[in-house]
Length: 403
Ligand code: GCU
Image 1 (cartoon, rainbow, N blue to C red):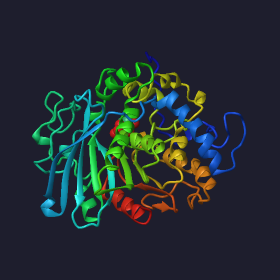
Image 2: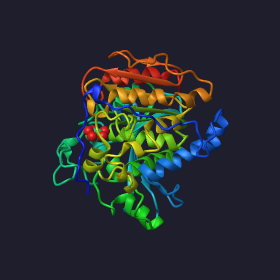
Image 3: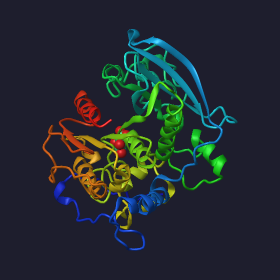
Image 4: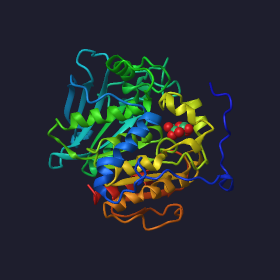
């Protein structure tokens, strides 16, 4: 057990000097000079390191998955969209372990349509006030809107439409899909939960699992479904996520190159911010408060970031050469906005291997001044932790010319 919880630093001058592990030096000490060697060697080394030390190992794509479309309505959103609800059963033989994907497809757009995907915090029913959306029966956190004994209720319908603005996506010509993260794995520590139980049964391992890994794995299973749905263009899927769900989106986007664009909003430590820059949430705190998020090996870095041979710039670099955008907020110090920016900057060498330029700035940008190049984007908006119309305005601009 952790007894010595290191206080979080929120004072810039107290940030100690740190050195990031290199992206371009192979384990054998050689420096890589080409995208090919990155792809064939260094990428795999980094993935192995991150799996082993942080996010855990997940099973391969299951062989016996089933997709059950249990709802189709072409008159959703006053006729603007077709709603589909699809149950993904990860292993046909264990039909109690599944996730439900809620999808809206614009009726006006030429199909197959590009799609924006994001996990949600407390059930698909929160995504839109549409009485046809199935209310999740999975565990939800007590503090979720309208939760009764950790179960979602009618009161939560449409509660978080701003977080993932489905109607706006439809109006902009994109399909929208969301999945409750807790269908894949509930957000508390219990080694017999949902996908975790399936995984342990499949792999007979107990030591190297993480909930963020499970969520990321679930996002890839959604992609498996999109590949089979001919209304959706699986080559143009934008993966998004806020906070802890941004951590999962980044890890999924890092591993699964089928995702065309990755957008992370305030995913902070364990997502896009550098742990070694000891500002904001510390490893000690994240492990103590959220022991389920990372695998058991990660515990050894509590009070010990200097020993980490990895950091979050590696996760961002794995997204290269695909477009990557980070949105963050000035008052969200826990997630360390500057550490998110520096992490993106530290991922640039890999984009450069592919012949792309770095971001056009080197200093942490001013508030409300988005910055882009062909492949990377960043903004620091005013305000607190969360996601706002300003964030989405910028994401739509970024997506439009890159998808
Ligand atoms: C906490 C946690 C963060 C996380 C956030 C969220 O603030 O410390 O690491 O990103 O929750 O998911 O909302």
